[in-house]
Each structure stands twice: as structure tokens, then as C-alpha cells.
Length: 160
Image 1 (cartoon, rainbow, N blue to C red):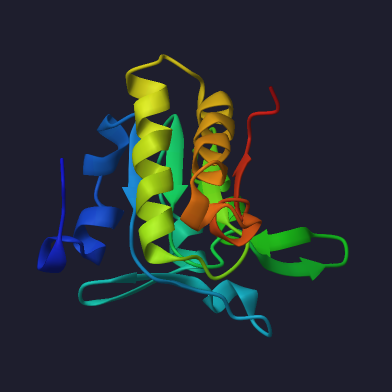
Image 2: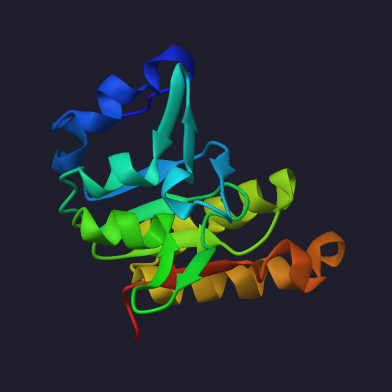
């Protein structure tokens, strides 16, 4: 399923439709609120899905991919840990979340994600191994050799 433009909306994300898939990829803008992390979220066609909204989702799926800028960072709260989008999606049921730690380059991210999915679907790798292979591949490309282009993506939830 592919939801683009006005189809990528709150009604779709908050419905039960997404939980039938193994992988959900959000290729949209992420917003991080350092002062009030619960107001962080992802931008949809007609609004904004906050971290609070994400905590209320039911997404018991294999993998969430957040390919937008800074989707893997949050605020460290004493006694609570890191309050971030990744934590929200894992609380909602996702086993793994791929997210970025800084502002990412659009073309490098598109190439990285294409290679990431190729490694999983064509080469049968786990998400962790696929991300590593994709990052290695992108780092070997002359124009994207600098770690800025490939090292910002991390996977949480799978340690092997």
C-alpha cells in the first residue's frame, strides 16, 4: 500500500489498516520539540501526528522506518529515559524502528533507503544487517562518502 499526498493522513495512520503490514515507512517531515518532547511528531497531509498520538496507536508490526530528519532524537528525562518518536512507535508495538539522528540529505537518503530495502527483500537480510550493508554501500559512493550522508540512520529494537 502506498499513501501519498492527501491519502497520507491522520485517519489512515490512526486506523487499524497499517497493522496488517510488516513494514510501515513514513517518508515525511519529522518535528522534534526539545522543550516539550510529547509535542514532537510527524507531518501528515492535513496535520500532525504527535508523540502522544503515536503512543495510542496499535502497531504490532515488524519494522517502522522514519526516513525524515532528526526522527531518532528526543529529550532525556530523568527517571524516564529518552522521550522520542522511536520510543513511541515501540510502545505502540513495533519491534524495530529505523530513524535518523540529524538533518539528512534527500538524495542520499533515497539511495540509502532503496539499498536498505534491496538488502532485505532481494538479499534476505535482517533489518539490522540490511541497514549496515546499505550504509556500507552508500559510503563507497564518491559523492556520499562523508558519514553525514549515511551514518545518521540507526535501528532500535534489534541488537544482532
